[in-house]
Amino acid sequence: MRQFRVFFAVCVVVLTVGALVIVWQRSETSRIDDGRVHIAASFYPLAEFARQVGGDAVTVETLTPAGVEPHDVEPTPRQVAGALDADLLLVNGGIDAWAVGLIPAAEARGAATLAMSEVVGGLLPAIADEHDEEDGDAEVFDPHFWLSPVHAQRAVTAILDTLVEIDEDRAEQYRTNATAYLGTLAALDHAYADGLAQCERRVVVASHASPAYLAAAYDFELLPIAGRSPDAEPSAGALATLARVARSRGVRHIFFETLASPALAETLAREIGAQTLVFNPLEGLTDAEIAAGESYVSIMQENLANLRTAMACP
Image (cartoon, rainbow, N blue to C red; front, side, top):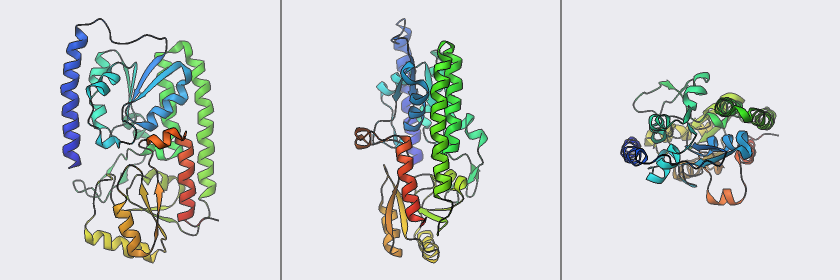
């Protein structure tokens, strides 16, 4: 079902881009020049990193609406127009195929583009996904790299390099902003390393495999109910096996994610007598989180606190 939605979304992108290009060919330009670099990011973490590096020298549009999973976006003409009007288009790959499909048209319009699956993904170890029905245990790029503060720093550096390349006049401003934010991410990395160093449990059960790089970075075992897709549903046998393993490992908390159904996590928690906790994969913020002033760093701190609870850390 997810593959059909992705295919449909990509088809919508292709048709919409074609229509918009025809319109733009009849006009001189559709960009508004206010002296700032206009950035379009496919979803939240990329947009947040761009804002931190760019500061007041940039405007950033997040193409995925608040409260929507980036997998599930069916782009509207307005979203496509926002992407094609940008000076820089940021996409991830693997989670936002609809946005990746915009790259050729954006580049034809003269925009710079940056795909994290190529820049950051090439530096990361592949992670097997035993839940993948097509590839079995095949090791592929896991798109959720931003959930590791170390890998997030690589994304920030890549955005910095691209902004400096397209806007040399404000290079020092971008470098100053990036240095400050990289320091914040380094402190977050240290908080995770220290906070998860000595815990009674070294296993975490989550509804989705998104924390895989986080688990690898801080040396705990991740047992996902589903694979990389939050919509995937394991068989009854697989769920029963996971329940036995979780019970034998003393698991007391099952994580569910924001923007996805908690049903599987709640079912497993009832089966083994555990409680549920939230793990926010930061694929997008809700309206309530935006209103509360939440950010990548604040939510990662909340994730750390919940991991410490689940892992019984002193």
